[in-house]
Image (cartoon, rainbow over all chains, first blue to last red; front, side, top):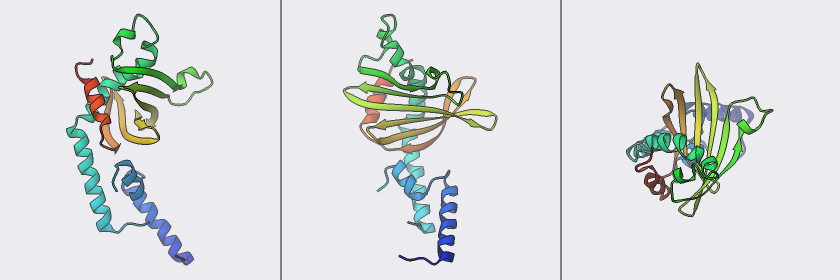
Length: 37
Length: 154
């Protein structure tokens, strides 16, 4: 998938928000930590 | 991969469920009891005649892999890593102190091979270390081994 710069910036932002939402972890990191498939 | 709000909500609910399950199994209290008053001392106890009988009989091996107190040039927060073999199974414990606002916190983790099965956030108070959050938990047979160890111990 190819992103425009503005889209990339928006995605980075969303990732940061996701990280902040649960003690600095992304959903994928959380899944790994709790063994969720 | 980014998650939609509904997926995140479902994920957070599932995590809360698993944390509750860990609480029901008594994981926080169990490790507060057996790590800080027993397991972290096993590598030293197991080497001395006077104390080796205090080591839980089903421990086959206890080795200190890392300890910041042994490094005279290290002046950061304390960390230690201990390997134990319990009922022929190898577990690695890692404990790292960290600064928190006006408090000393610590992270206790357990690994089986390279897989982290438990991460507990702890804080130090007048009574010792206590767990205030479960940051990783993967349920498995390993819990039975430690519940057995915890029975009747200090």
